[in-house]
Image (cartoon, rainbow, N blue to C red; front, side, top):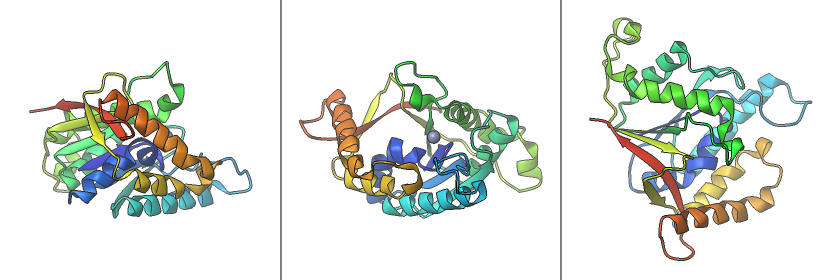
Length: 230
Ligand SMILES: [Zn+2]
C-alpha cells in the first residue's frame, strides 16, 4: 500500500502506528512525500539545501523504525504546494509504479477545530492525491505521457483512506505499535522541540482515539475515513 503526504514527518505524526501495524502483518508499505521539507525547522543558520537533505535523512530513519524501506520524494517546493496537474501526474506515476490496493493520504478539507492539521500544503496534497487515485491513475487518457513515454499502465486503487477528518469510519488499533510511532517521531529531530514530551503526547492522543473507537481502557488507535472505490 501507498502512503502519500506533503512533508517529511506528516506520515509519522498522523499514521505511523498504523504503518507499523501493517508492516508487522507482513504488508508492503511505500511512502510518497511531495515536498523535501526545506521550509521546515526554526534554525536560520541551516541552509535550506541542508535542511532538505537533513529532513530526507530523518524521514528515511523514521520509516525504518516502522518497517518501511521504500521512501520516494517528489521534490516539490515546501510551502508552495498546489493541486496542479503536474502534482496529480507525479502522484499518479507512483501509484502506477507501486500498484497499491490501498492509498492512505491527507484530507483536502480544512478543519476549523484544529487548524494545524490543515496546513495549505496538506490541503493541496490531499486534493491532488484523491484526484490521482480517482480518476487519474486508472484512466489511460489522463497524463498520457505516463503510458506513452514510461510504459506505465493504468492502475485502479480500490481503497482510499483519509486521516485527520471528523467523520471517521474505521479504527486501527495501535496499542502494540505505538512505541514504534514514538521512535519514528523522535527521528525528526529538526522538527521536534520537546522530545521528552513526545511519548506522553502521542499516547494521550492515541488513547483518546481508542476511546472514540470503543476500545478497552488504555488501548490506542488511529482513525480514518475509508472510501471503497470499485
Ligand atoms: Zn505537514
